[in-house]
Image 1 (tube, rainbow, N blue to C red):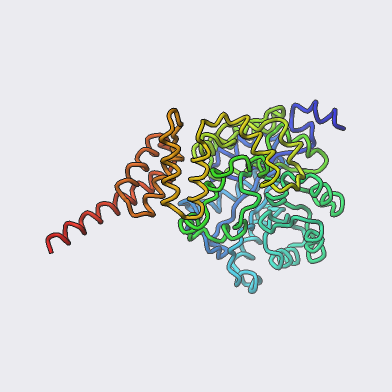
Image 2: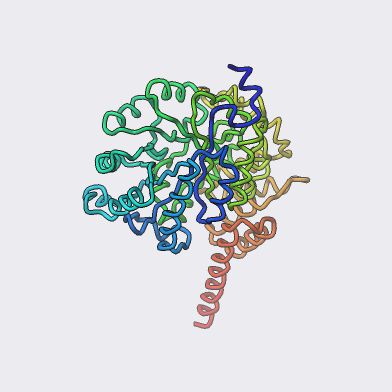
Length: 437
């Protein structure tokens, strides 16, 4: 078996196929057809206005009536090529009235149209009571448990199976590298398993589920816990996170049925590059996600761009305490070529995570005072955040401006720059008014 894994050059050799998430672009569907031998399925978001999803106003500006027409077309079109469609009912902030009053809900009539008129056959669902009602209403529909349901052991999976007939499970990020647990889920439940291979979320995130509910409060959420800061503080933890490079996907042969490519924050071109990457480059240890590189420090593994080949065998199913083990940290130090004094930078992010902005600035300055230190957009952005929270707006403007120049594509820097510029102007106007008074 191991020899077969080592010889795999295409994802087809592993028995695994790909799933992608629709990018609100019909040309995207045409490109999927080009790669139909590798792509098993496509996930589609529903029209949130029709199902009382409280976050719909935070989605990109979309002509939802036109989106509904496109959705029906896509389902019928891809059915011709035996490419399955999964409707994503996986949001965790569904209006409770939709579940309680399901029979009279807009969701029920929406599903009836997609199932009866367009041929929808599969739904990914987070809410167990809702899943039971949908299955009772449409016995022919195939249900998948969403990763947001955090079914991370056999007992939870059996709990779902006792309540409702489901066919598959999208495993939560925390299990992505837990091969033994995944193998148990496969053997003891007979569920088909899908896994989001380019998931870069923290597997130990303290807000794993709650962040899904905070869409309307996204800015406040990031001020409470910014996962990018946590990743900058301990970059070596990336090796234990959910991102699976193509070369390691071979180890999931016989366990995982579908490798899901999450295209959030990516262009159609970037998503299709990942399709090619995962389908035809099974010897690659590259993190193929250009958008990640611009949002993380230069020394982070995702920014460096490759995973050390020896890491996966050690960290998969590792139960060691990271604080005492130091294996991942040692590997990162070897591969990152981080400059002298990087410990000051890491300490700065540690202070920033705890909202100790003054200490964070002091640590960041210690790092920047070292000859030959490397300063990137991420560092400038976070120093700007510190000064903003210290109400030192002129300095915040200075560092956000640097961040924009170093990485014009990072929207958060530009947004913060505009905000602190306004705050700085208002502060000066208020000072002028007070002097006149």
